[in-house]
Length: 349
Ligand SMILES: [Cu+2]
Image (tube, rainbow, N blue to C red):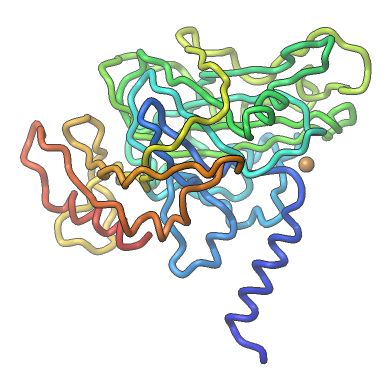
């Protein structure tokens, strides 16, 4: 019998069969809280309605593909293939550690791991990705030339996770975290490097005032940069990490295996919908600790032993146990529309 349901199942099966290589950054854990956030997975498009997550949407990335140097000047290099802004954001603090989790990564795909931030200067939910000005907050490339050990190897050794520490001095605001691996196994050939960028929305709180200068992602890399056109299979002792210089006040995070997840959250809206509801455009960003809504921690979820980065639950299931709460020390009366917006988000997940 042919049915829509059957077609959907077949599509998911095909998707699973194809997804045998490469990888996607599908989750983020916020430390020290140990709060797990789902990123985006292309299979979400088969859920009705799709979960609202902090990861930028990439429904076209059905084959876990990559961006080639020929795409470095196109919007696809910003947050991956046809990426659209995430609908919610993770509330974090400047100086915190964010642990990005990948669903898979082939050992052959040696290369650097890079992380960037861009202030949306408004709601990230409606950000124009081509206008985002990114500054680099973390970079790691060749770790040990004699052992041919790369940042990607370290990520793989830590259960497909990578930790990045946010600068402690940056101004609070709505930011996009752009996390990226570049696979070099074919980079000895022109147009052979493989970039895998993935983006997450953050509401960063704190007392910092720094506003680092950034550049658009379409200006990060050129095809003949020494760290892009690079032969992994000849003798080398150094590697020049590509992209703009590291932010002067960047901080480092220890690379470790993932710790136990203490809670699961979906995220917060970074803007308040105008009174009256509807699909009107957002009117203001919510940036301060006093002004943003947070979700109450869900009951602790144990990470199953021996399962790399097992997600605590599907987003929809996890969502059912999460209650929305609002910070109680607002500088101004909390608009009821804020709570409505959060509950709307909850209802959609
Ligand atoms: Cu690959």
